[in-house]
Image (cartoon, rainbow, N blue to C red; front, side, top):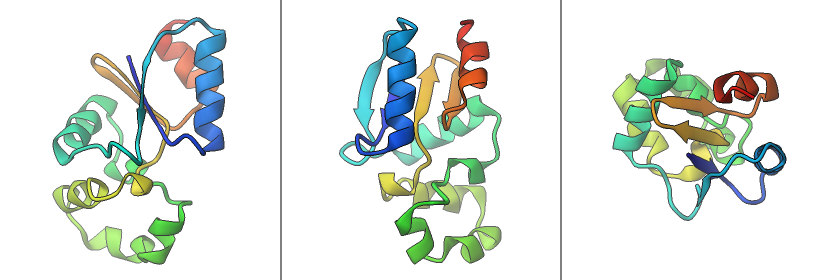
Length: 117
């Protein structure tokens, strides 16, 4: 299991604490130091069943400063994935990858269900 996070993100800290409290072992990856590649993002998108927009950190400073709210509707999925791969701060986190399952953002009930806890 892989947890992709930003160390200073409060939601990531909350997810990490929750996993630790439930005895779930995982590898940790700093999204700012080791940004997901376009290929990884494409794979995670497919496995998550989510719309690509859910992979964007819409509350982040970079997202806002780039004016992505207005630009994304005119972009293809592949253009969006390419953009996400340029900077980890554009990517919503935490991301939990467990084999064929990918969870984006921390929702305790969703994580409990997916992990069988």
